[in-house]
Length: 289
Image (cartoon, rainbow, N blue to C red; front, side, top):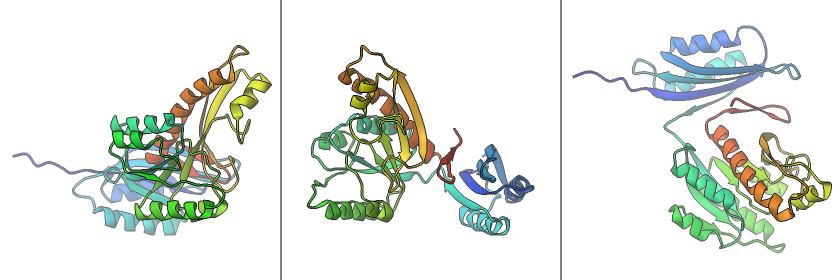
């Protein structure tokens, strides 16, 4: 009988002020602990002087267990003054989808998860309307309807926060959740939030972007996936794309084209987050595609 080796696959992200010896210190630490680097990306930002790296690695039976490896990375980070995150491929992130009436992004994310394109566990769908309940049921995903109006907004957001915490959600996806979230909610949210905005930000922010685009006679319409911050539509941009249009396109035509690009851009941003390809920077993010 041939012995088999059990491999653990991990992803290490770290960022710090740029200086000589960082790559050597981290790669040497991995080697010394029985880990093999599978892929590495790095970037030195000339504007901020920060260094970023993503390392995908595997460790075999001779390597320390993941708790020991994590402790070792923590010690190394302390001596090297690194900010860092470590994740493991067999621990997919728990995700919640927030949606209102429009369901095209909801269907797309749920289908991509079914097809194995998104490495996550979709824990629930949260909506302020009942209309997407059947979509969630199609995929056997728990559905929570939390109606909102001007009189109960704070209470409703509090219930969402409690639900995200109770379900141990690690990423919230605003899949066309058409409510402006309060700064208090964003501050209290127990996980990062990714929003899809139906415009190529910073152009046409706010409401009715396709009407604005039609009035300006644009030749492209686009979509922007970004992290949510307390400043409306101004969080760090993760992914963007556009689709060609012309003066012949009505608002309805632009909206239809926009839905196509919204699905693609949101899925791309979500996948990059789930695969730990995004590192934080001052006012923006670094994305290793």
